[in-house]
Image 1 (tube, rainbow, N blue to C red):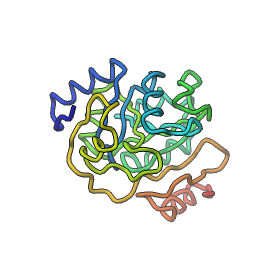
Image 2 (image 1 turned 180 degrees about the vertical axis):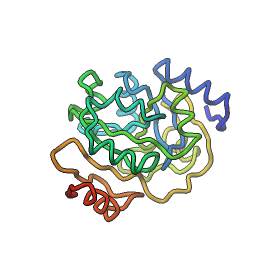
Image 3 (image 1 turned 120 degrees about the vertical axis):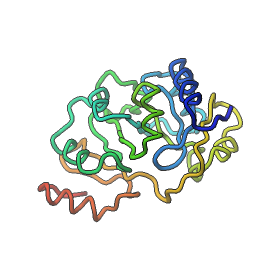
Image 4 (image 1 turned 135 degrees about the vertical axis):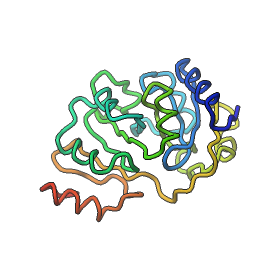
Length: 210
């Protein structure tokens, strides 16, 4: 089922997520697959749908700053400084996950990646669905990201309970992923926020980027 972005679509999405279902929606970057991050079965469905490796953790979107503590054991001062500088925005921050999170979500890494999107519609959807959603890209692993709802439907003619059509994405790059779980910040993926920009920010904070 495809529904245009609307109050009705948000209500349907919230019911779908609470019942353990899967949705596809436009994130602040590309279209993503959304599920309750605490539902082991829903996360397994995503992995099966995408043919995603079991060793790759799944990134989450949060609707508000206060949701961070639900997923990260103890945000470091560096995490908070970087988040305050770049959030809302296309920067995914990886930190140590709370131990009760499903292993299906963290892939046994002990870490979790979070992003607070700079998009009111996306944050409203995530908030309606409980404040956090998985946001792995809506494509088969290794294929190009879906830019429209019809792209999602072409990739997955079955297996998704609801696709929310919020138009074609306008971004050209995915989020940047910065790992803050270790002793030194580590750039996992350069995207919308450049390595140079992060390097300068971290230098101001007395840290080096690896």
